[in-house]
Structures are given as structure tokens and as C-alpha cells.
Length: 379
Image (tube, rainbow, N blue to C red; front, side, top):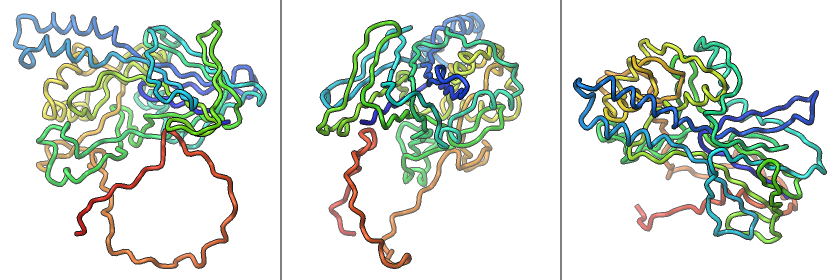
């Protein structure tokens, strides 16, 4: 029976592969939320602008609304083939979870290449940005901690961008952009010279487990086993655990993630750095043009009183047609090829191999068979 734990959202991963101390080989997922830290920044911003011209109309109301957009909430959902109607259950602040796989096949923890390629390494980013060495983990920025005693860790999804969405401001949706589709998108980490695709979903696979017990530390938990019949949510003899840590959705698609700074603060990087320079200037110009209200509110909350002090964070930016904002175009839109209606079959590889008799393998419940869509028109 396989067990799969899916992790999505603002989560700081630690994969301990210490071969010299097997008892410590664990996977730790820290769900990050620093929304409490915004209170001081918001009130300091109000005081700073009191009696002066506001950055934009109805400034205080907008600041309070944008502050609420950054409250992350941990949730858990468990499928074992008998509870298809189950939904995500909110985790209380400070509630921790131990996920324990049976010890018949003793602990193993390792990462696949996808994890090493696409999971951002905070230490490397910090070194590039010339940040001070970290101290101990700061639990003030951790709302929940999930500990998994064994498994193979991989990245399944990277950051994407719905380039044709109506949630992008109209002046950034040209006619050519309306043909774009939801697809992976590259980001750049400000001040760190890091550019590429970054993980947004991590999966821990345990293919030989017979059971999984989920409990709060020190408490009696519940043990789950897979159902011998497949369901719409879980394959045969499979247990799926989904853990998310999201904030409320905003009405405008934002191509920056300033609250990523909480990842560094949770990891012990307690000293922000000077982010000023041409890169931040270009991004600030773009942000104000893209959505003035959001950029002003978020920079007030996350970039210090001077608007240029903080931590590296991922963003993507567009090069407009008039060239006013620089940056690689492929950070914004990656074009996919058209469906080809003139592609005759060619036997490029010779005769097909003889089929082998194989047992049916259950599909990934979080990645089911996609039923192709069609249009009734023939032209």
C-alpha cells in the first residue's frame, strides 16, 4: 500500500538525511505565518503618513484589507477510500502533527532530483544576497509543524501563471496575451541573482507502507489503511494526506510574493538587508503601474519604513511594449506550441515492441486521468 503526503503553500521544508544518526532521519514541514508581525508595520505606516498626503485614496482602509490577505491557515485532509466527502480541516495555531509510517521497513529519507533542482535553498539565496549567518529557528513565524518519519521527497509542481486571466490588470493583457494558458513561470529572487522555476507543491512518497498514523505529538492518534476498492479520491489500498498553508485569495493576480521574507525569518535570518538598487527600482515602477494600491500597501508592510529594507523574495515582471520596464519576457509568459492539424503519422522508430503483460497500477489521485475536451465545430 502506498502512502502519499502532499504539501502545498508557504511551507519551509527540512529533510534530514543524516546517515550517521538514523533515529534523526525525518522530514519536517513548518507551515509559515508571520501575519502577527504585520500589526506593528501597519500602525507604524499609519503614524508615518499621518497629517501628510496619503500614498493613495482611502489608504488606511486599504492597508487593513491587504493585511488580512496575508493570514495563512494550515489545513489537513486525509483520504483512504472510505471518506470521499471529507473536506479540509483547519489546524489550530500551534497545533503540530506527527505522521508516522510503520517501522517494518525501517526509516529512510531521501530526495529526488526534482527536489534538488526546484526547491529554493534559503542558504544559497542568503549567501548570494550577502546576508548574515542564521541563528536558531524562530517559532514566532511557524504556525504548525508536521513531522514525517520517513519517505522520498519530490517536487511535483512549480510556480505557474495564468497569463490569459482576467485577474491581470487590463493594461497588462495585450491581444497576444489572451491566447496564453496556465503554465509554469520563471521567477527571480530580488537581490540574490537567482532565476528559474521554484517549487509550489512537494510530495512525500512511501510506497511500501502498510499503515499511517496521524496524531498530535504525545497523543493517541488515528491509524489509516487504504481501502481495497478504488474511489474518486484514492487509489486501491492507498492513503493520501493533503496539507495546505494558504492565505485568502486576492482579486488581482500578483506576480510578486513579498511575504516570502517570513521563510527567512522562520529559518533564523533575523537581520534584514538593504534591497535598494536598479532591480528594486524597476520592480517598484512596475508594481505601481501594475496595481498601485497593492504595491503601496505591501511595500509599506514588508519593505520597511524606507521602502527598501527586507529580505530576498521571488517575483516576475513584464517588459511592456514601450520598453519602460526591463526584465526577461519569459519570466512573464512562456509560449506553448499550437495544436498541429497537419502532422501525418511516421514510423520513426521502426516496429513497436512486443507488449508485456503488466498489472494495472493505480493512478495518482491528485493527478487523475485527464479526460480530453473537444469542440463540436469541425473547422
